[in-house]
Amino acid sequence: MLVLYETPAGYALFKIQDDSKVADVDDVTSNFADADKASKLCKLKAFHKFEDTSEALVAATAMLESTVSKPLKKFLQKNIISKNLTDELAVYEKGLGRAINKKLEINCIYNDSVLEIMRGIRGNLEKLLGGTTDADLNVMRLGLAHSLGRHKLQFSPDKVDTMVVQAIGLLDELDKELNTYAMRVREWYGWHFPEMGKIVTENVPYAKVVKKMGMREQCVACDFADILDEETEQELKEAVQVSMGTEVSEDDMSNIQALCDQVIDLSDYRVQLYEYLQNRMRAIAPNLTTMVGELVGARLIAHAGSLMTLAKHPASTVQILGAEKALFRALKSKHDTPKYGLIYHASLIGQAPPKHKGKISRVLAAKCALSIRVDALTSGDIPMVGVEHRQAVENRLRQLEGGAMTALSGSAKDKKGASKYKAEAGSGAGY
Image (cartoon, rainbow, N blue to C red; front, side, top):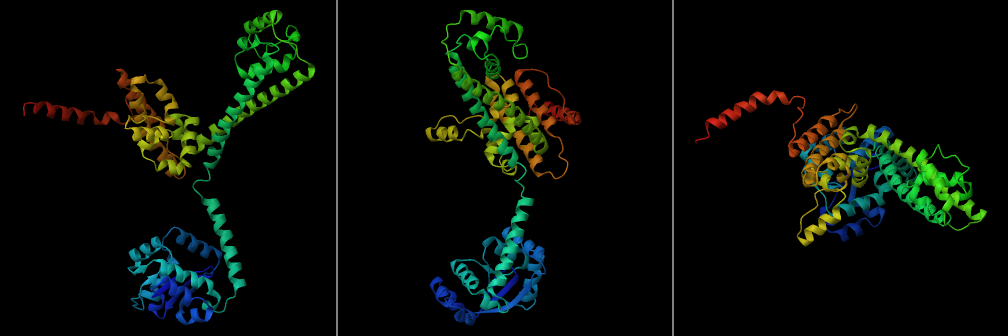
């Protein structure tokens, strides 16, 4: 039996002198218990040294992806195929064994005994290789680990959309916090000026009015032209004359105004974060953004984990993404499954009447799945297919509503062929 072992220094090919001693896992453990036994059982047959760290990085990446790199292919051809060896080759990973067998037609094995052999070789590597020390191997391992880590970080296909996932998560958290703080301001200040809650209904203008006015007695003297319209301002100043609220101290009012500052600051930051999310989505997934908008698109990416993972989902999964609990509950109780998940919040589905929402969600999910794959798998400039896909969904919506359809680019080419088939269908009507 031959054993392929990759070290930080290069590829090593070992020969097991007696296969019967490694047939069982316990036998392997006992035979590799010390360096002397291991050196008698396992002999180094060939070694290919890496020229530099970059070659070691390429080899490690290929091994992780279960592919056969060019140096490994040459190494195996030189030491196994050219010497007409028929021994089985033990590898540490099943996928790598299949790749070697497919490319070089070398019989590879992978089982518990092979894993124990690899463990034994790793424990006695200094003795088996010869000429190297543990300190040298540790330095090589550290250098290769750093290079591989940098390579993964630099070329990770998921690293770009991580920003979108974090931004949409933060945006949702901000909405919750902003709503909680605004409700607290209304409840707190409502003890002092309860009539204001029905006059100023928006949360941020409410906080700005409280910040500017302070005590209700100062309402008449304040100018709210930069916050409220003229009618609302007049109504507010009339209501303060007959207010039934309780009196509060200056210390109470300073705490309420401090909370108002938090609401205003969070609101401003939310606007800034939303603009950032819009720009990132237009750069990363322009076609998905065209189809469903920035927020829905970002939530789909965040729910899937990454844009590449989302691109691997079929249209049926994209359609109900976010409604997993409802789906499994329906399957368990044998009721109707949900027709939409996160995609329900897209504007195209919002335009559809209730009876057509299920059909439009299916059409939209199909077109979204295509758009996502274009965004995820295109290198360089991303072609804008989202506009045409959105037009197709709008056409389907008009068709369901009984309206006229808008011709898509290239759709006129098939008119002649369509009339031909209609004519053939008419001639064969009496068949």
